[in-house]
Image (cartoon, rainbow, N blue to C red):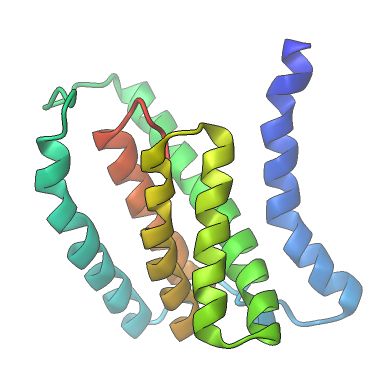
Length: 179
């Protein structure tokens, strides 16, 4: 039973990653129409780095004083590499699914702002399924930022970079509540 249960996240990740591309293929729609392109121009990179600076930097002093945070941390290099890989994979998979596919589908049925907010809400609720903790709902707010980046640049690359930075930040400061 344990082995079958451990494969479920990989199956889910595969569906979330390849499902939107399969959707486009079956419907004969261009993936670019769903922001499923991986383009990043200078403006997109600047805005992504600015968003990271304006959102994560101000939260860092709060996180450093958060109850139970023993800083500075020291982790073995193989653990750091594993966390970096996990943060990158989660960012790519979730951005393709939420910002690339879901946000585009919603924006075809409603206006851009509602699609960004609704996608951020779905994104936050999905994080609650993994582990119920009030702090996990905070993913709603970076979900808004990622939605705006995806909408402005018509690509999931800026939102995936922001997502990766947010994953690494949250894993470092809140390792017992992986977001």
